Image 1 (cartoon, rainbow, N blue to C red):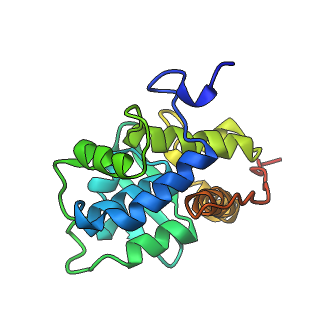
Image 2: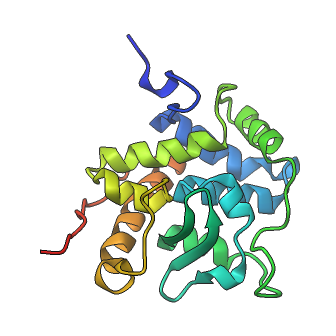
Length: 204
């Protein structure tokens, strides 16, 4: 039987058991991986962002009250992203010294760190930071969200959250971000939590 979690590097997604193994590894790998790197990996798992987007995220790009991040320069241009409560909690745990500074300290060894964490969890060698991104998108699809909604959650090329959504649909996008992140957090904790699907509302 074909295992859809291991089709190709770009389409690789984590199974529920692998999410649980990753969650365990994130909890015990602090002896060999810096805590802020573990926070980056948890943030990537909860948001589906590209690793470079998380590493370049500055405090001035974030509004934690409205739970929105404005990324000025991504692969798809300027991008607005809703932040789940779970992802916001990871950000709030980081020391905030200067708004112009990155949220997370610079990391030049992220691929190696991912491998270290994966090894601690007994995960296969094909698990990468991109796996977390594709797993987020795949789980969002499992929950019933549309491709445009998923694309706006992860900042897919050509489908970024624009200013016209800030007042009209931000609550819907935040609810979607929360549902997917909660489902992932449950899997990282070793449980399976399926969120309530809230479809994207379009203008009449």
